[in-house]
Length: 66
Image (tube, rainbow, N blue to C red; front, side, top):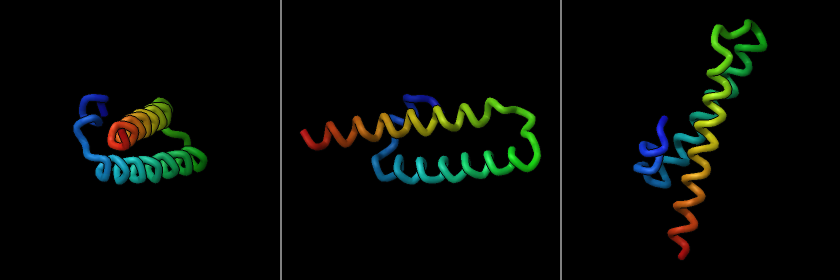
């Protein structure tokens, strides 16, 4: 997910997306432990997407409090 798309989401939607991405990441890690994934970069991409969403969410919350 691109940063511009993330910025367009509301704070509530961002929180929901973060939770779903975190569960998806855990699921991918579990699947990888059982049988190796074909593309390991998926885990890295998921972690980075979560980090992007958390960053944008904290920026939105900081801007709202000012």
